[in-house]
Image 1 (cartoon, rainbow, N blue to C red):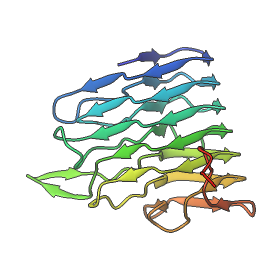
Image 2: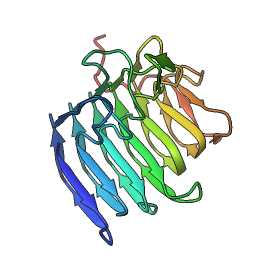
Image 3: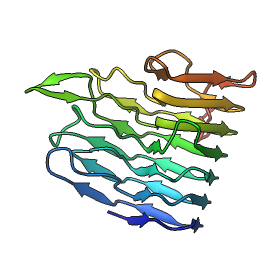
Length: 219
């Protein structure tokens, strides 16, 4: 995989690219194809996470932010065309997503400003298979525990497997919360943003639903 940070006062990542990293763990062991961070707040600016992939995810997808990593901030960062899957197919998986957040407490925070999550895919479903719980997860932002403040960002073209009961763009677990405003989505239904029982989603008055027009359409 790309990078691993643990027990550091603060990790600073500027003007970087994490591209085509992968982790093919065995039976729900892989955690973070581009970056895995535990107990280390991150400041990331102008950084791209592109075409990273993970198989057999445990608790972590493309970027995994866990434990005492509260106070992290991502500014002008891009998550593009990353994939998380299970059993080597676009089927089912563990807790993952383009950005997976599981902080020490529900009060710990992560900030995202001017970030884009586009065309990421997630294979995951919520059922028992061979006596093992298979967990749903989004293709974009997953707050398992902690709080996210999202501003001036774009979620577009993210996809999840048909059996996935999470959402394509943003999903909150019971100890997760999100305050989102000045942000564009392709839609606001449960296929796009959703939460498990107890999750707290607050959408501001300046949410935009539409096409970000990444590519200019022909006349």
